[in-house]
Length: 141
Image (cartoon, rainbow, N blue to C red):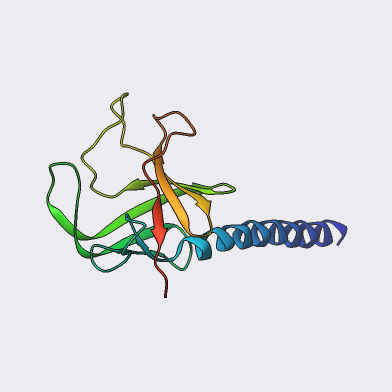
């Protein structure tokens, strides 16, 4: 009986930990979901992108208003990423069907890094930690 009670308490404790971890991710997810552009002026007139996460947070989708491209690749309207993990201001992920490899010959691991509530940039595992592309800007709704 005592062992069964211990099992139940342990499961409840694990559930509480996973819930708070998911809640923390949900905050970052909700900050990133929305419509974004690469230009700060005359924003979101054309070429903007929408970021969405799957309900479980394991996938990130970027939907292009026009076609998006991978270096020398075909155009796509939807880019799908497998989320590897979350940290304070960063989502690490791998782009599905990305032909690019890092300097070690592995698939590129991308970082979507929030800088402010209304800006983010892209980084990679094989770049220095604070290296980033030019900022992306949230569209005003």
